[in-house]
Structure formats: C-alpha cells, structure tokens
Length: 381
Image (cartoon, rainbow, N blue to C red; front, side):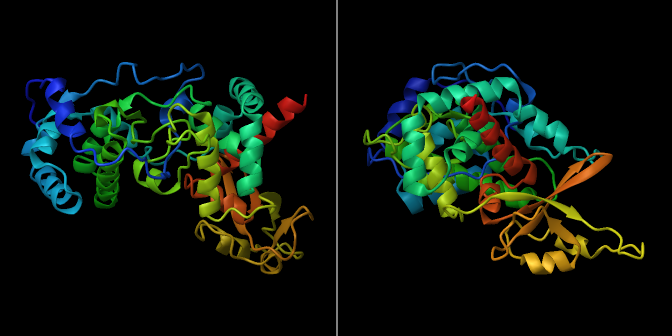
C-alpha cells in the first residue's frame, strides 16, 4: 500500500507547474472511454463545476515510488518538464481507492442483460434532457451534421449516455485517478496493459495542462480520467477535439458546442460514413429445414468490432435481416444477450462499429442509437 504523508501547500505546487506552460493553444483531443458506472447508478444528477469539491483520496508519497520516478525521468527527457516541479506535483497527488474498485471487472457468472442495461439510459429523465439539449443547440447540431455527416441524433445520443448532457461529468481529480490507476491498477489478467494505458493518459494530461497553462489539479473527470460533456480521455482528446464554437480554445467541460463538434469529428476519424445506415434487426436460424441443429451463424459472433462480412455470406450461414439492409454493404453480427431470455440479433454496418470505437461495447452503441431515436421522437411530439 502507498505510504502516507502530510498535505503540502497547493500554493507551492501551482506556480511550479504553471511555470512549465509553453503555449496557451490547446491541442485537439479524443476518447477511449467507458460508460460511467456512476451515471448508470444515479437517475437524478447535478451538474459538476470546477468549483465542486473533488472526490476524497488518500495522500500517498508517489514521489518515492520507483515507477513514478521513472515516469518523471521520461517526462523530463521527452517533453522538457522541470523535475522539481513534477516531484512536488506527485507528492501532492492522492491515491484514490474508489477508482481502483470501480475499474475492477464485474464478478464472473452474472449473465449480461441488454434490457436491464438499456433501461438505465432509455428513460424519461434522459430523453427529456436530450430534447432540451437538442432544442438549445439545434444550430450547432445542424452545422455538425453538415460538416461531418454525423446525424444530430447520434451526437445527442452519445452525450446523453455519457453525462446526461453535462449533469454528471465527474468530480474526480484526473491527476489523482490516472496516477492511481497507472501505478496501482488492481490485479487482473490485463493489468500491465491497463497500467500502460493509464500512464499514457497521465502523460497526455500533463501535456494538456501545460498547453492550456492551467493547474492540472483543476481538471476534474470520471473515475477513469474522462473529461467533459463527451467524456474524452486526455490522450484521445489531443487528437480529435475541435474548437467548434470558434472562441479560439477547446473546452469540453463548459462548451456544449465544442463537445458537439468533437463527438462528430471523433466518429468520422473512426470510420463514420456520411449517409450510410447504422443497424438492422436480424434473426438467426438454429435448425435447418429437416430440424437438424445448424450453428454456422455462431462463426460470426465475436469477430472484432468491424463490419467485414457480405450479406450473402451471412444469409448462407442462416443470418437474415428484415429486408431493408442494402446488399452492397459489409456487416457484422451484433448479439445483445438478455440474461436467461432470448438474445437479440442485429446486423451492424460500418457506422454502428464506428460508435463502438467510442466505447467498445455493443450494449453501449445500441444505447446511443436508441436514445438518439427516442430524443428525436420526443422533439417531434
């Protein structure tokens, strides 16, 4: 366990880090994020601001950890950071046990349940909030659709699933959570890969804060370090976020317009095709005409997050659509398990799988699609 130490004065940390700022131009950002377990657990949420009290954590002398010292060496050599400033910064950084608990995988044996998952997101509070958001930012959503080819309902669906349109952007200090997860990730089979990911995000966070000229402790986000209305991770943020409101800076925490443009740009950069469909209902044939079990369709399950099969090949394996799926497009088979009830099957086109690049989950992508449709229908009524 980390060693504890007395709290340092924040006044000593801020000038040291702010002195590192070499540019006030914010780079473009993106996201690899996961659906917030907090947003799934709360139906009534309040908007988070930078002034809100961050989640508590334990003081840990991260500066004495060998891995942190090596990380500091890298930041000094690769990016020209001041060593003493970083050492002071990491002595001030907290260890967040709750972040460790939240990233642990669900207990084995509990079956996935699409209907239960769906009910968390396709519900009246979120739909009404989405309609209000769409009405308030209709011009920006229309401009994003024209610029990037991403329908407004998909952008609205993502921001709604992520943060209920800014009501739950998270109040963990990003520096705390990323340091904790980058150097003290729980013991799981993918521990090394996940620690590398979070250390990379920590590196991007420090660069992001330096470019903005801000105290990195003021950056608040989810327990996994995702920031703002669209919950972009810092590393992806620097590649895909855009200044869509034209004020000369990118602000995903306070500018819904920047969030709208950034979500659209992220999807385009990850395979979104303007004017193309997203997903179609499907059925699978488990027995042939003689009643003999036929499981050829199972070969299409779990075959990466991409549309790569022809409709002809899928039909030959017993997978059928509702007749509306165009023959010339590639697809992937989407299975939405319902616990002990029957699984739902869908044909996902390239645009469906573009959404899974935002969060690598069929449940997530389908929730985005269905929430967007529900909000669009609510506005129409």
